[in-house]
Amino acid sequence: MSLNRRDFVTRSAATAAGAAIAGGLPLAAATDAAAAEQVDSAARGPKPPWKAKFTVMGTTDLHGHGLNWDYFTDAVYTDKAHNAVGLSKISTLVNQIREQLGHKNTLLIDAGDIIQGTQLSYYFARVEPITAKHNPPKHPMAVAMNAIGYDAAALGNHEFNYGIPTVKAFEHQLNFPLLGANALHAKDEKPAFKPYVIKDMHLGGGGRPLKVGILGLTNPGIAIWDKANVSGQMIFPGIVEMAAKYVPKMKAAGADVIIVSAHSGIDEPTSYGDQLPYPEDASGEMAAEVPGIDAVLVGHTHKEVAQRIIVNKATGKNVVLSEPLCWGQRLSCFDFEVEHDKATGWKVTGVTSRVLNSNTVDEDPKITKLLADQHAKVVTYVNQVIGTCKTDLSIAEAPFKDVPIIDLIGRVQADAVKAALASTQYSKLPVLAQAAPFNRTADIPAGAVKLRDAAGLYIYENTLEARLMTGAQIKDYLEFSAKYYAQVAPGAPIDKATLTNQANTPDYNYDSVYGVSYDIDISQPVGSRIVNFKYAGQPVDPAAQFVLAVNNYRANGGGNFPHVAQATKVWSNSDEIRNTMIAWVKAKGVIDPADFASVDWRLVRAGVPVF
Image 1: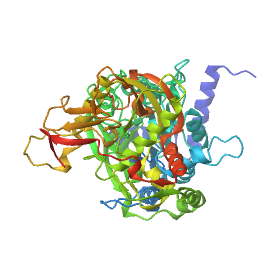
Image 2: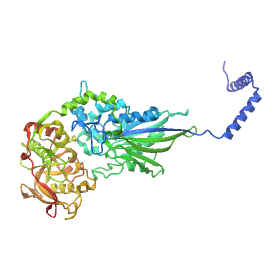
Image 3: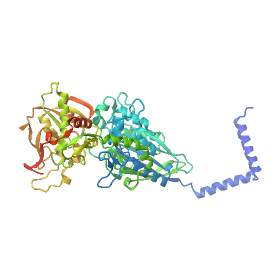
Image 4: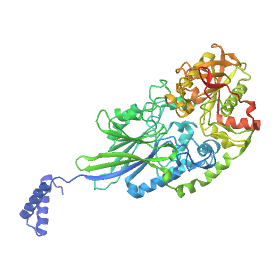
């Protein structure tokens, strides 16, 4: 039998009245009681909002450090500050925070540069690669991060050092999303990786879950630094631009809180100049310009920033930024205070950040056990003997003088290029070679030389190229490199601690050139320092042609050195320079500085040597 709306309302009212009487309370009395309750509720005022706290933990620039181990020295990691490294240490800190606050009240994220940097990560990219077609191994960083329970990670630029297939294979091994809102397919400009994720957090109070949005952004410099691996396949638009695109989308998708995991420093100078229209380190600009962001986990610059507050220009609200020291030396913690009101939902009422030092805890035995077999395999690999050396070769003084260990890099690169060009039209041209002091602790001992000694000298996965340049261009190149030094007048005291790394120039962007001789007059201003510039004992003709053996990072514009990125490429190699060095030592059998070392450059003031 059909029931119209009037019948339904009438019957419902009668049923309700009967229920009230059956409950022992007349209808009129029930009405009076309800009215009294409303008056009492109004007197008490609205229910106060539910208040809660949660913490987002973050790492960045892990660079293959799964354990607290130095594969170059074959020992537990140590430095002058007694830092510790590795996910095994981070895991203990994370467990402590989760135990203290409750696992459900925490999240754990990373800001990129995960799979490059140690021989552990190299081994599973190149020796037993995770891209193998049959029975590929699990990447140890994926094993550890899955076990620790990461919620998300952003792409770093070094993720692309081994090519797109390797980073994709790594992504597929993770139990959490690898984010990159500005890592796009070149063909259609659609995301090649998931842009963001929204995590539900159940913080109590009887309301709906708090929705925390995590946006991942990587560095636009990938287009330069890993040009050979990404050109024509992927593009990397600006961090600020893509944050402005995705933050509103995340809000529309229900995010109550927005955290950006950005592989980009806060406000450092851009190392590639104006080669790209997007800055390298834009986290600070993003925080100031893009409304709606609550916190930023910063990466890329390998610096420790416990807390930096930037006021957003549009909203006037504080945005909290934090960067934990690289390699798992620190863990950032963003401590949030939020409140929930049934009428308005969740809102952030406070955010602060801090860093925890991983040297205060032991390694998590769960992680060390999980990685034990892979670690042992890599230790065996790096300790294989590849030759002998007649004398100890140290890099310690390389920032201040021409030392044999840097000449060794130059000689290996020059030999490789000469051999490659032997049957070409460039075979008669003189070959020079660029080299930089990547690692101030590198040392090749007298006696047996192990693979790890060579790997410690050349720590990056750079490959070798040959570029055609003129004498004038080589001089410009050296002038640019010499900005590394402070200007010090003749007779003034020299302080080694402040002499180098001027103009924010890291050691890896200070190049010497093997095959020519020159003086660097540090009493002169930048741009006028290279004097006595000679080849084979004669002044260099500005129009003369040379072949420069140069790593792919520099050849593609890394460091923004003049001329080289635009110079004609006459040869390139897909194998790492490190492997070229290992093969050279194996072929020679003995490293003898008498075969390659000479003092071809020096620091001077008005012609007087500094050291």
